Image (cartoon, rainbow, N blue to C red; front, side):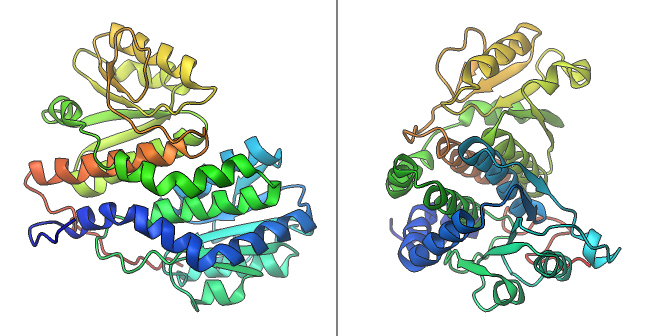
Length: 345
């Protein structure tokens, strides 16, 4: 695509996602395989993750993927356990996956170091080779996404999640998943072209909305809710497509917008059913799947695998929310009160 000086950094970085994935696999293919082999050798009875923000959403995505593929339970550890409380966890024989773009946030580094000292095999997924997090890890993965100028993470999120998926594929010797990852860049290029204008019209006059997901797509709902807040000043809340039918249902009334991120996996029928139930109550519900009776269908780019489909959905969302932010007269590259690197203790 030709260069356009009017494009935001965020838009350019979304368009770079397919190439970023190709760089990841070309640059770090051997390291991804070694990390997968490390997990196969360790055979951890459980895995812990350490991350914040979008990186934590990537970790949540990997939690579901690991549990579904390997049958190994995964839990998130709050970095303050080490950085603030200086507590030691019994992690002998386990594995720890730490995800950080910069690889230098003090609390993430402290928790990952503590996990290693407490007996865990550690894997660092970062966009900064040679960072403190990468140096301290048993296995360091450079996602090679290149500079990301927009405050809102897009290509680094997708590359981090894809890196984790590749590690799982090597660990489990999952050839179908490996093939899906190899073809993922072309599917994500199509995903970035999906037109979600009807969603913009529904959300435009509203102050808040729900974003639903289930399984691996629940992580994408969390990520999408964060991006609505930071780029567009819209209060979005992510819920499981099961949980929303309890307390949160009290907020749903005529015209209330709901985005249901549905991948082609075992959760699709139940997620569609919930979406139609919400639409029957007057909500403006948008789904990324075929088969809805009352909810509105948004275009989507299938990837051919249930674990890579959620990444296609978030790329389509990124393309949508970048345009939605500009539509509201905002600059998605420079959200109010935010900066690119946040170093928490």
